Picture 1 (spheres, helix red, strand yellow):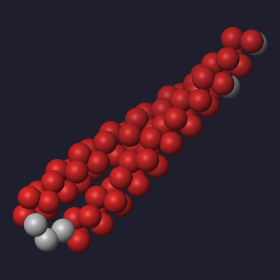
Picture 2 (tube, one colour):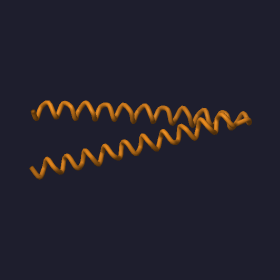
Picture 3 (cartoon, rainbow, N blue to C red):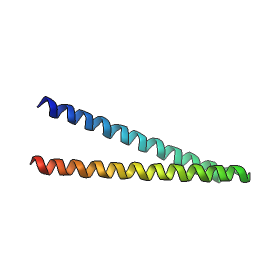
Picture 4 (cartoon, helix red, strand yellow):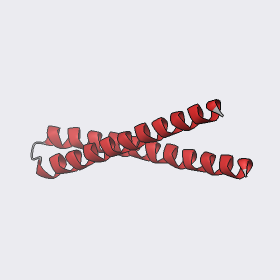
Length: 81
């Protein structure tokens, strides 16, 4: 029983870290979009395009991780019931 509660605590901690990372990347995306929309120098436009692409890829990666974690949780619930 103690082992299970530690596992649940670890899962909750992992979930909260993942959600925090997703929120952080969402904020970075918003900032990069704003900077891109206001840029006039070609070099800055290129810079913000790279920042946007990078943040979009991280966001997609984190969302996939969240979906995988949700599926694993559902499988564990089914196995324990």
